[in-house]
Image (cartoon, rainbow, N blue to C red; front, side, top):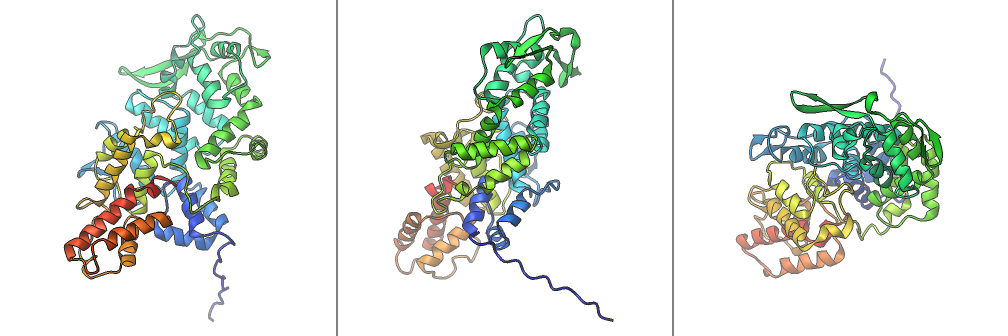
Length: 446
């Protein structure tokens, strides 16, 4: 007997959810969307798209493994390969939000000048904990050997308290304001006792040595007790300044536009009620209508890592050269080496004259011979209209956002070669259009 099958109706798009919404979300919560992803997730709707982004299934790296001019990547032993290793994860991971959160936490808990194995281990911790609870992440970062060394936590002993970690804990990691110098001094006492664990002359972790911990009473935020490290962290996240501080930091990273007091309070309240869980907080931010305002007019400057990884990702290309290290450094971002404990300056500070020259260099690699946007033989084998030339160039570089003013410039350029350009001229038209799409102002924003 034939089996009866229940017919499942095709999904219909949720009202008001378009490819423009998907493009905005995928750039802010990841590293861009390919043309097929734009179509698929616009069709499936906002809820399904967010469900996909927040899928907790372990990440898979898609596509060919990275290389440095044909040589395999060796992040532990080859200079600069640690940065290529992480950039490759941004390009190939099927969990882009996980990588975007790792980038956020790398800026938030900024660490530099530590042994490569420790920095790579910290990166893994941020990836694993980045969407769990903030208290869990904060504790993991406190005992992280790279950060503990960087902020002198492993040199903080009862006889000579070091305030470095305590100060950044309050100023940069949890509160921003609402504390006093006395709070910092008392917290430094409570944080005494950590030492480096070493094997064969190398730091491999940290451990707690009670013999160098200050067991006396301390008063932090008006509360007195024989506080230790877990108490300090608990007091910081319980401080009324913490929820709105963290909400503001995440809002600036994902949305950029000023947050209203009412929205900040609502998000902060939900964050506290959830037990300070990060996943629902980030999802709430990415669901807010403010993220999707002016979809035709992007206003957030792409971080250098986002620009490079996103350009490669949307073009279904990968890491094949080490040039990205030099270009990203010139653009102002060297992964695993933020400029200070405060991390990078965001926004228009990425757009210095030297940085823009480097962004132009990104386009040079993309459209160079054998580059990911190089011409495929036969693409310009026939005469095309101006609109066809522009459409071909846009598709070749991953279908980025193209504003009306930019489209007019592109069409003028294609028109300038005459009605029936030669084959060589058609090649030049395409290369010029592709370069302008990658290096032009539209592509610097998301």
